[in-house]
Length: 234
Ligand SMILES: Nc1ncnc2c1ncn2[C@@H]1O[C@H](COP(=O)(O)OP(=O)(O)OP(=O)(O)O)[C@@H](O)[C@H]1O
Image (cartoon, rainbow, N blue to C red; front, side, top):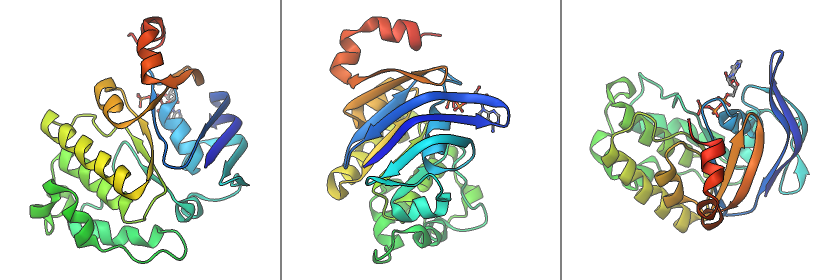
């Protein structure tokens, strides 16, 4: 469904991704893991055209999207939930979700913010709460719910567990798993929490210094402990 062929990504003069190739199919759930600074977020942002300048080919459903700005990629069905969440602080939870429906793919019916909120137990009692009044974990859950309002075919989820309480992390697992099962949404998840990543994905990609150094199933990853030692140990 999405494929990147030999891409190089840069922030100004800094070269971050090196001849990286990656693809994932419809409904696939893939984790990207790696040390701080390995380039995980840069890969998500490169797929979304949301920051780095990128050379190389990126295609969605077999059609090149290299020249498409991020809002058009959103309308094709890509939704990035960035690490910093980008909640609108002076809008309510419900308004934050409602505003995102503009990014939905062409021809999709408008999503119902209340129906989306219903799927996130934690948000049910917070509908009228303003963004700045939410805890970090609540903001993260809202960022995921907001992305859902755009009916994504693939959610690009960047480090959702960072700084989030364990109980909320567990609830995220249940909710995201149910959503992927029910809607067929694909998931590309950058994550340092291997337990969380393993709960939600079937395939794991390991990055190190801007390159992919492993791509396989969790069973293959576990059977090769040297990968963890070499590329993930601090
Ligand atoms: N806006 C930017 N301008 C310049 N350099 C950047 C920018 N964003 C990231 N970098 C650099 O790009 C490299 C890769 O960063 P990236 O955020 O992609 O890594 P990451 O694997 O997601 O790390 P983390 O797990 O810490 O979020 C790092 O060296 C980082 O300092």
